[in-house]
Length: 208
Image (cartoon, rainbow, N blue to C red; front, side, top):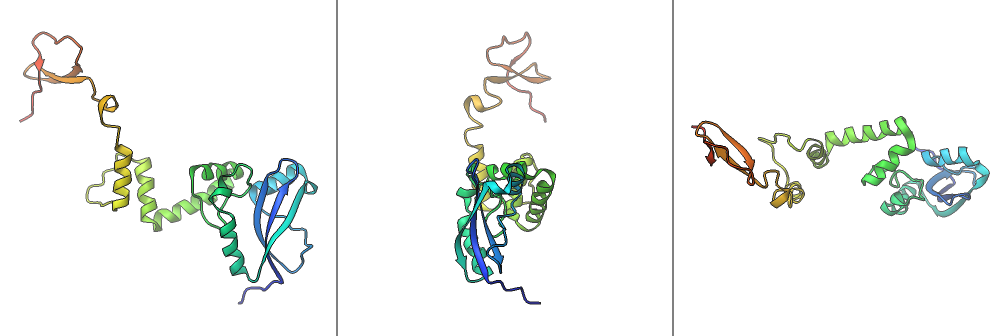
């Protein structure tokens, strides 16, 4: 069954006249006076709070087809728009996913559990199909994961190395300022400034 054809395909911008917050979207219609001003999660909440009469919608650009409309929306709703605190958009144009941490926080705060579940589905699908994304998530939540027998790609290896740089030297090292001592049977660590207990000496009893 072929997709319905419309007379008009356009990009619009809806602005809250009270606080200046805005929303970009795309719309397909046969009637330019159908009263449509957008359906975004934050936008709908804002309309419920302030009233539809306090919003202005302007058509920014007409496109010849839905395919061109989707492509154009991707250009307009970009990273800069998503991270703008005055923007009510939550997703990349064309229905893209989430990107930065700030974008994710904004997305979660906007919709409560229903929006969280939507993101969860996106995350779950990417964990199945996007191995690079999967590695990044696992490294972040399970830094001590045993990767025996598994291989990281070169980009992931570099990022892991960058994360570790500066964390294992000098005062950043958890063993900084300590030393091993032994009584010939047992070994333990003490601070270098501590007095050496009677019968103990510097060094470590190695297991055979």
